[in-house]
Length: 193
Ligand code: SF4
Ligand code: SF4
Image (cartoon, rainbow, N blue to C red; front, side, top):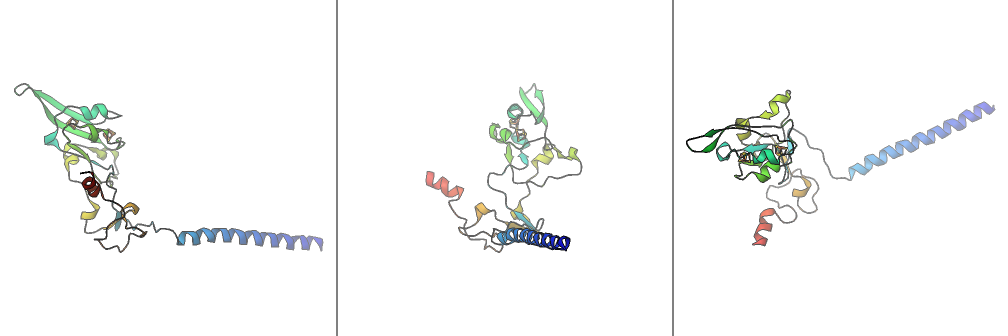
């Protein structure tokens, strides 16, 4: 009889414990119902990268003077600048230029210090490949114009939190002309003038 009573008490304790665990789990579920929706239906929806996003580097061959400043300021000496010296003009002549994005840490030092501004960081972040050697971009691949989320008719661009109007948390179904909260960079430049 005592054994049976003990079993009933244990069963009761376990039932209470299970009820507590279910309650804890559901409290997390209900808490998420009041949070900002963060789901993006990629690849049909994509977030617009921020203005200072450091994505794939763009390179302008004609502007490069083969000074190799980008190599010296790179923490891993990554850009490969292949040039020859033209005796007639007494100038360096650029032959090839490449950056391996499988190794690059996207710090932006090369872009910051290039004296002719032939390097720039783009908002392109979709660079996945099956072969890591394909990440070694030559000057032709580096010169390709970057992909823009806002230019792709197959994609619904979504604003990140920083681009949303005041009080709005959901980037879906937002009118295109509605202004984001706070000052825009061009407004700040105007104010500085
Ligand atoms: S710093 Fe700029 S100009 Fe100089 S080699 Fe690098 S990319 Fe070319
Ligand atoms: S972004 Fe940084 S790591 Fe990549 S090539 Fe430029 S300096 Fe080197």
